[in-house]
Image (cartoon, rainbow, N blue to C red; front, side, top):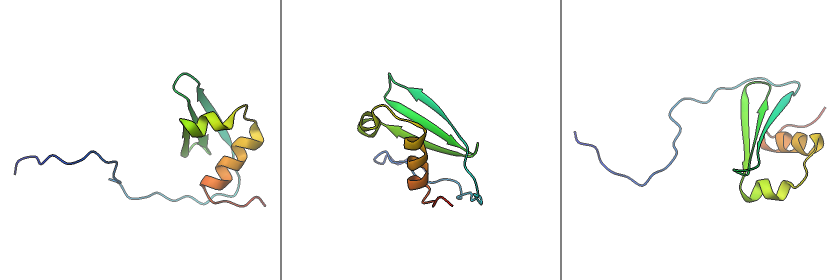
Amino acid sequence: MNAINVVKKTVVVTPARTAEVSSLTWRTIDDVFDRRLRIVVNNQVLIVVEGAEYDALGQWTDDTIKQIILTRLELVEA
């Protein structure tokens, strides 16, 4: 069969991995030139904040990062 062109789209090609989370640690990688903040949570989960969402962060703190993680991963602080 020959290749068929389609509109470019990101699709899931591997099954989702799950992990039980009872505590959080993170490190950040801030790329101001590309307006992108990468947050690596528990050395397993990558959260990316970029573009307008990055601009809206302004001067972020650890509390800001904590709220992003809790919101994105739908976690509740104990």
